[in-house]
Image (cartoon, rainbow, N blue to C red; front, side):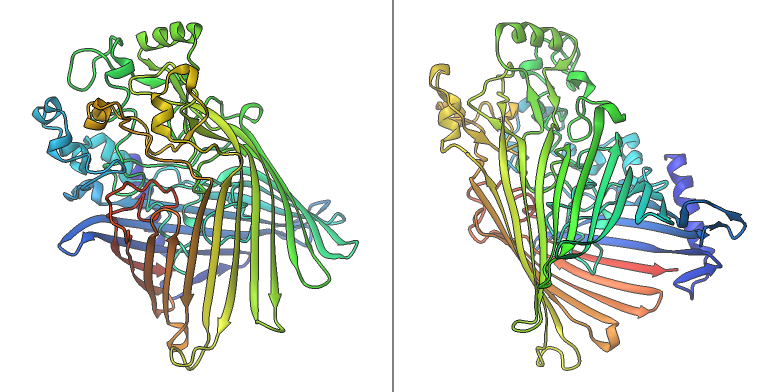
Length: 619
């Protein structure tokens, strides 16, 4: 057991249990203390006959707010020039998931490629080595790996920052480890991109509010944020400029692979013993032994980069800075809007089917370099998260006269998003890793919120209705057939984009389609347009103590895959809340064709329908 993680968890729990149970927030003059204990339990039911216990996540949160400088006086003793007031904020979170100790025996029936884990599709050597099923079960992880996963040790502190407001200048500063939230989107993110997501807990399923929200799965970073109040600018009121700078503390979205129950629905494409590209193939000449002895295994990517973790940069201001700026204003007729600009690395957490690996372009020089790298156990590719320019806007307008509805809009253009292009050949050809082409993307959302009286549902209060329509459009995407282009001779190859979730597999090189001249992969076509529709409704009963929510997310492009869900929050008393929810991932057209959509519906999450029970004790 990881003793440091256990001490962290014990400290958080002890702090929680010592708090007075009757008070939601404890106040000691300028100091406020609050938090909660929470246990979430999830049962997965891919079909009516199968039930798999996949999560028992226990979380303790402790939050402190200290108004240490008020009216220019620090702790009511010292006069501080230039500063009117300041506040210290601290939030910590201890996490323990018992499934990594109990290792329940759930196992997926298929991954993103189809039924890749049945005995019929595994090579004889792997089956005889006893790896056919164990590698996709939690018990297949060694003790050290499970100990490192059951505690989240990156949360001490989760947030720690200082707010300062100056006396004679309309300027506010927030500096420290924090989350910065911009934009109007309630679900899939566009302008809310200063903090990348942690998708290892429960993917993105712990949204929408009021159940939890994005705050729980954003990765806080050490940043500086400034807000300068402009007052009235021309005809626009409540104008301000806001900007932030992340001086090197940035990471891409955290992803998990099988056998972890949540995350991307396949084994690590680099290291897994079934079809990981670190074993055999390009790495065959490597002198390092693979999992089953012999030779032919790579140990790392170029520059010791890490897939979905770290690219070719150092965590310092000169090598990994990110920044953004926005203008906010309200037009005379009531339209509230922002204009935004970002310059930061592409995090890969907004549903874009981007390329996370960059190989070496195929030429004589790189062929020699690639051979040298493999001889040292280095796979000739690097994790890739380039800088992109993002220009965007958001707006909302409340139409109180005619429709009594709030309308919302958000749109961005990403410049330079990387995609795999089978028309570009790399030194990795067994199995083939395509080269990269950068494309611009237009993304947007329009939505509405409305408080509506529906008497037959609720006679005492309104029902809150919210809906959104999202789109992604790749500008200048070529029309092509990926398999045809991949198999064409070099002189006839042309640009053809394919998705990052259908990387080639060594285990599928011998499939009938490949033997007949077809391609064992490249089925994940990049479409010009992707779309998503969401709708949700909730209301309040018994004075707000019972809050039912229903909703659905629908992808009309990818075989109408969908996610209907419902949840009920029951406030037993002021300090204790019970939440019961169910999510269903539905493919009306079945699974005859793999669905590679990256929105997180029944393509990525096929077979992951679930029931969740969450208990929260506030203190």
